[in-house]
Length: 80
Image 1: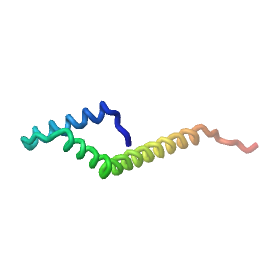
Image 2 (image 1 turned 30 degrees about the vertical axis):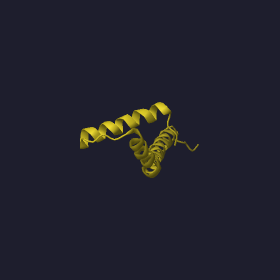
Image 3 (image 1 turned 90 degrees about the vertical axis):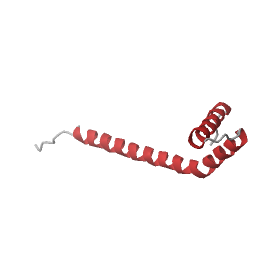
Image 4 (image 1 turned 60 degrees about the vertical axis):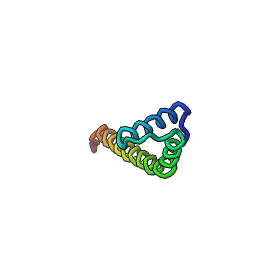
């Protein structure tokens, strides 16, 4: 996964702010960048896969609804 430089910079700033607000510690840009790289490498695939699975579930529900709608359009056949 690739992030734009602007997105990376924003996330790094947020990481630095989090550490300061939650732990009273200031961390440098390199430490924050390393943490971002770790999260993207180790945790990113889990979040990505969860998003794909959610998309599949939503799409499957949508297709099922379309199928139900199509069956509702069938007309009763008469013999004769």
